[in-house]
Image (tube, rainbow, N blue to C red; front, side, top):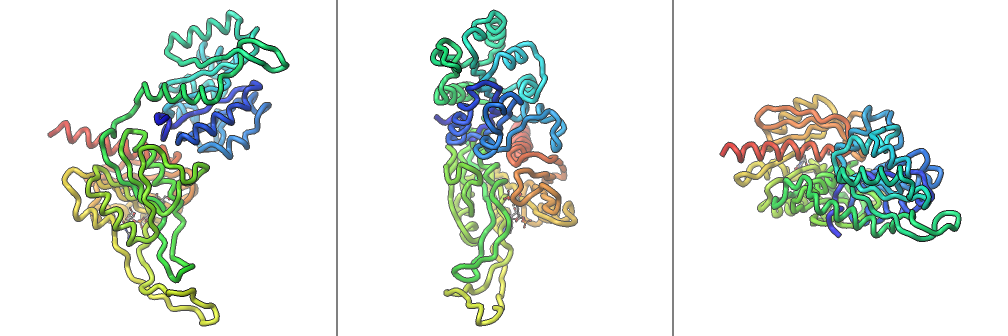
Length: 412
Ligand code: PMT
């Protein structure tokens, strides 16, 4: 199973006893490398706690149409999803979706999305066989919605009959098939992409280092977005993939682990030789201790005088020896005079784009799940990308880069 890897899947859970099985569906999707965003109805929380999904999924549970951070969560969810899966889907949610009624975040997302939708009904036999439900299902099928199940078997209260939610394995397999057949946004197929992620660690002695607060989230988001768009990706990283998946490797991504700027420079130079796109999201130390101690420095010997020297500037090195046609995307993490500093890095390092990060701002940059950036292009264009998840930032930056690439190919 490969198609769900790296895909953004909105997992809608509505209020039925089978909601507990959605936990297993969430886990299986995560295990397969999907980016899962749970959207629960109020009814769902009567059967299963949101804390369970918060702990397992890629993003916290969303329930409200009136989110504090995003004024239009349903459109954001709908527009950015690769697939919306509803499991279990109650008669109410199926009816609302068929009738175009958006009374809560889940039904609004269903109506706002243009992504493929998979509905997994679960209810008592009498409800499943009711003509209203049958008509609604027929309407959805006519519109191209995939319906999975229900199965026959034991139902809540000991009854037997049609209406039982399909197994989590069958549901995840169905989502995989749907994504496989849609092949959305494969605009990076055949391209080789190199991404750097995390903060480098420059040793002071065998136990101490100079580091920074980079979590690798932004770099991994780029790697997974590029892989989901069909690219062959190498991520050169100082950290494991953040989140519940840990070291699990998303299909299409090769992970190269490094620690220091020197190691990152060597691995990146090697991988970049054949790359079509290089994205330097890592926070590389600018200085390192000249002569790290071979044994742990003892406190009793007093405060050590640590002499520093510059590290190799990886981005500038790549910029200076960029092969024809390669696209080089750098970052600028700044705390003041962001626009000027980012513009200086764009020209000084020979990048095609600089993604400027005002890392002094709330919920932006290091370690947060969200980011807000401004992309500067070497031809002078400036494209702000407002506050959103790091995956959505990656999506917006790659949309710009790929749009420019397509336009320049058309002009040749
Ligand atoms: O990892 P997260 O917690 O998700 O946080 C994301 C992030 C804040 C780390 C990321 O969005 C970001 O801004 N990355 C760049 C951090 C950085 O080192 O910025 P800089 O302005 O110091 O460097 C400018 C560019 O030169 C960067 O592309 C950097 O990778 C590169 N560089 C810097 C120094 C060096 N010796 N070699 C380099 O290649």
